[in-house]
Image 1 (cartoon, helix red, strand yellow):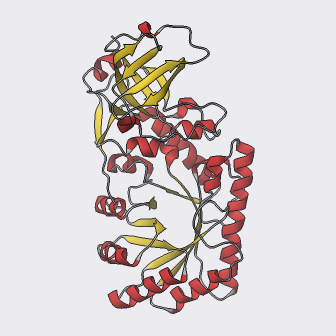
Image 2 (tube, rainbow, N blue to C red):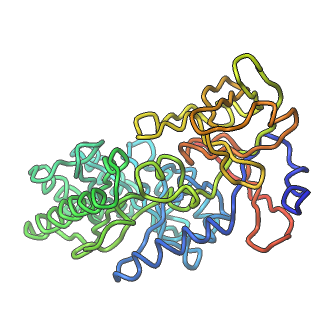
Length: 382
């Protein structure tokens, strides 16, 4: 056995593995790309959900950061992060938790895209005696929520915040359609659409006599591809820390950049069907099939040996709750008997966020050769 094999042999499967060296390489690459253009990077911590990972992603541990749940904001604020955007549309019932975090010294801002939300934030700010900062979400590509470019409601929302008891912090957009497109050139073009929408909205607000100090854009594909950041104050991205098969499939990374994998054990075979059965079903991998529409459908994940090297021609074709089914496709030259009972394998996930959400901890393979495995806790909830 190799040293790495000996360490992994002590881990019960299925387990979530994190390659620290690949993670660090991913973090450094985007930090250099965005920082080299003179713009602040605001990492999204929704995939990580780990203070250990956050300490490695954030420059000094205090921010700036992006979150998708108030549970994330609370955990990271307790860790010492002081600048956070809660980047999911706010509802009135959550504003008490927002105010409580701000009372503890965390500059937490909220996101909204409607008059009703703006009124709720302004009313809560007046009631609670603090100006809750809000960013207006923009819909730059028809992917999800946000104010459409050119919609006059943008200024109306801005006035409610600014002239009420709240704070108009700026604008924010997310090029979600970039996850549906393949290739760096396409991502670069979408990044410019994203930038233009945000900068244009900021100019509209300023022309109306309203402040817009923050112009926030970002998605993992566009953050890596963008060249022109004129008028932008910050770039957000999250899954780039780990990457996954969806990101590799659209050309945002290489398969070798994927830092996250699921360690699994062969528990049986169906010889007549050519199947290998493992203990990592959809409870371990998630049901995400994000590569189904790609040029290469990776099933429920790419099969690797225990050292993390892909085994060409093997994929997880089906997943039941606790059973994963591996089968060969064109290019595999072996037999299912080549993977006997007890064989340890790693599966690269389609969607890092969804797969990681199934686990309470990362088993971290340290960058230092031969160093013992580390355990970094994860948390969940909203």
